[in-house]
Image (cartoon, rainbow, N blue to C red; front, side):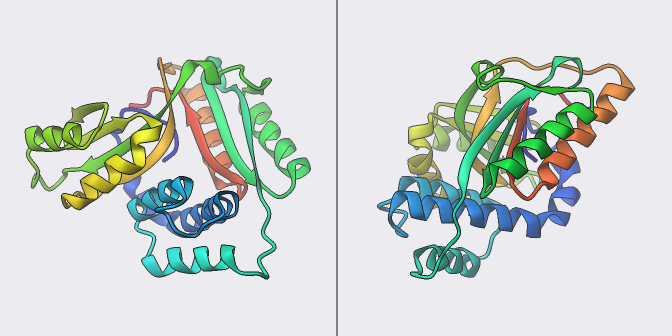
Length: 244
């Protein structure tokens, strides 16, 4: 699920996430191809951006064979995949701030599609920077302790010892945040201690949240996010909608 909302609803989104697993792998593969090409290396030890994407892929349970195959494809002499990152910003119903990150091979296709979804569901696409000022870029690592096998104090101690900036527990969900530049080192250190992540990525985290009260606004906001995330070019949708 893109969009940071304290992750207290992660369990109820698992089914939907599983249904979109194939699409998620395709999007991560696209991000990986860009990371290899722009970083000039298929070795995550020498390509920090690739290391970040691999951490995200592992948290999404992307098979190692898929990861290797994608990297090999990006390194191949015959690879013609060419994507550029574009970011769209705007507002959803009742002023909810929305950031849409895309990797596209055709801006003239992607921009109108994103704008249409803003307009159709009670929002509007704005100028670059219109909402991003109200978000902070952070590394976010989620550990799901649904089975209760982990001790909160131990996880917090390990996270901070590994270089995390902060730790927060919300029920069975442990959220570890890092500075963006520390993300790769922290994920590697925690993996070295045997931790498995439900999610691991560098995200745009809102400074404040907006709670929608109108049923129509809630319906439109949910539909807009779903359709944006279903767009093949869209990698992430960040927003400050506080969901129950």
